[in-house]
Image (cartoon, rainbow, N blue to C red; front, side, top):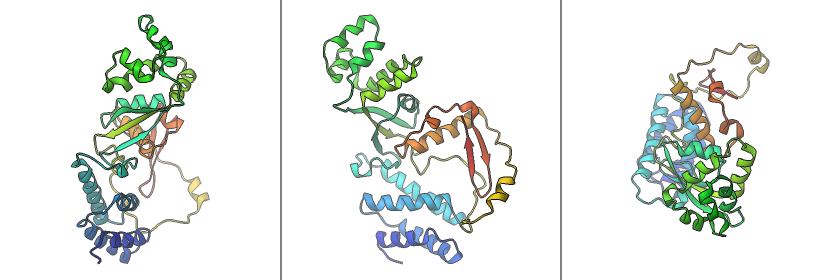
Length: 292
């Protein structure tokens, strides 16, 4: 085995998608070897992280499962111990790192109540609608005059004496006053063009650790590429899992975060009715969530 991280990473990438005893043994050796080596830059970590995600989803045996879990823990420890994290690591869904993006009002409101991350305003786009337009519709009459003075977004928030750390929460709360008119609310929020900095405070807010606990783990001995779809469609599906209220909320949160951490958003996840959520445990370690 090579003593260089990159060479071992290339070898792991070549073996990761092949399932037989020879390649399984090779993966175990490579994961053990890589665990003793530091990566040199963000690009190397990104490539390693991507192949780990695949191997964690399709482990051949308990040893591969344990070694991928250990590798994720090492990555989490690397970021947790850093007082300052280079920008090159941002926007990748790693533990304890930052993302800068924009989402809908409803999703940001949900995220703002999530203890696993911290949200703050990063910036306003120059071509966005100014805050005067929104706050003119939501502020009490005594404060509404501030919105007619031609102030910039920052000047308006200063005039309203909103502390910097509370500004996003303030705007989310003000926009919530328009919940009865969701089309108007969403339009006004989108037109503000606010960029939000999201800081992960818990390793569960990451692509590696955002998962639904599943036991037992299904170990993949091969990749099923061909199957009789007609026979499969004729099979009865099992009854949905019996979920407590907290388990249902956890599954819903994992679904939402799985998109957030790849900087995406879809209406079905954002506007999910959690009471409709059903989780089905199928074959080969696959679980499917259905919701409205």
